[in-house]
Image (cartoon, rainbow, N blue to C red; front, top):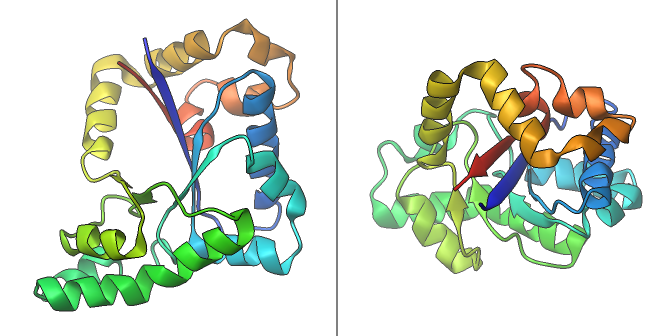
Length: 196
């Protein structure tokens, strides 16, 4: 069995969000579970402005992707790309997300490993822009549908139990166990676990 943990760090408005990301990253590191944290570009710039080197250190043991530059600020990716041809759409995506890629590179000293759309907003021109930005993968184009299908099949409580089983009993010993393993919270607090 392979387990893939992906977490979105997307709230660049709420104070205290950086502490939650840091704490979850530290817990996952302590139990030996690397994850991909998809970070919004504006959030990376906020951590940079606020000198949050503690968050950067906590994420060193994990993979870091870009969760778009501004997440769901309008126009969203779909809204912007809707009437654009390939070339104009790639140019638009470069303008939109190059600042986020640059912020991840500055803050973490590495390129984002992937791009994750905000919600299910995506367009084919994303692939062309990511190639130019040297971001090698994109996430969520169809993963969101698979997660929703799994939720309908398993139900929220069963999905919680599956994540808890994958993480094991050790998680109960950590201060934030209730935030990570609480019933119904696994998608909101941890992201999703995908078993193959």
